[in-house]
Length: 337
Ligand SMILES: NC(=O)c1ccc[n+]([C@@H]2O[C@H](COP(=O)([O-])OP(=O)(O)OC[C@H]3O[C@@H](n4cnc5c(N)ncnc54)[C@H](O)[C@@H]3O)[C@@H](O)[C@H]2O)c1
Ligand SMILES: O=C(O)C[C@H](O)C(=O)O
Image (cartoon, rainbow, N blue to C red; front, side):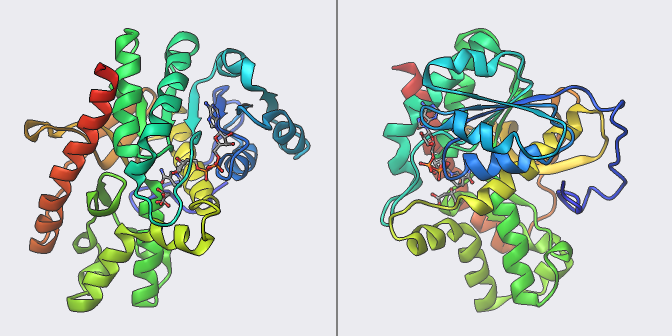
């Protein structure tokens, strides 16, 4: 589906014969929503998906009927509110964009009270029905919902930290686009590794690690970093109360799902940032963190170190860690109550 690799590290051919690709069922929970619909559409065009299972408390059968007419080989089924378990049967990948989006003036953390329980209940169903699936969490606040999903699976005795991912790809997409805008180059030449978490100061773009990013300094650097960290707010403001990023997120979610699919299919060198259980800053109480991760047949194959960073990025990282720690602890506390 995507002509370009997910990150610049993916440079080799990714062609598969249909016989080489395994059968992969992908379930989308929240498929009737602003993200869920275009994400499901993009997944229907992905030839690594053999079966697409669309679930929502509202509207999923209609979305499924519509998408099922697209002339790619995958089967599409839609499931109403009371058929969650059916939707999850046999799923190898579960993507979760279910939950409420922000309105102007809200932080992602303001969504916690509503989305924490939605994600918890969906994760409980995953634990019960498809415990071996890779779970890709889009619902905000990602910094807290990923620890919640992990804790639910852990409580059920089926937690595999290699298979739970917070989707931070939109930050990577924005960083490439915004840097390309500043330097006047194609985003294909301005891929940026973005580490940390997915909200404000927890989003840390490593511009110094790219040839074009290194050249952005002074005020231009400060405003570029701010735009990457607060790109979500731009969309929330522009939509004026009608929600947050849906189309760019669907693109980002489909791209990350494609990366996971390619890893499961045995493709080597699939590397992209994602928010996972990570040892990198665990000694500082931050045991979930996004860095470049190599994806493989079992999910996370290898967590890459952050690599050399500039003095400015050291400061961004120092600001990120306390906020991220609070967000992670909030998710864990919710699950321990
Ligand atoms: N990770 C990211 O980068 C990123 C980017 C954009 C948005 N988001 C988040 O994604 C979430 C969804 O955003 P949206 O714009 O699609 O919202 P939306 O309101 O348009 O859609 C959400 C959908 O979830 C469904 N839903 C609610 N509870 C459910 C449940 N228990 N089971 C199944 N479905 C349920 C709703 O019926 C709705 O169709 C929000 O939390 C938003 O903040 C994350
Ligand atoms: O900004 C939001 O609330 C949605 C999403 O997290 C984004 O980054 O666009």
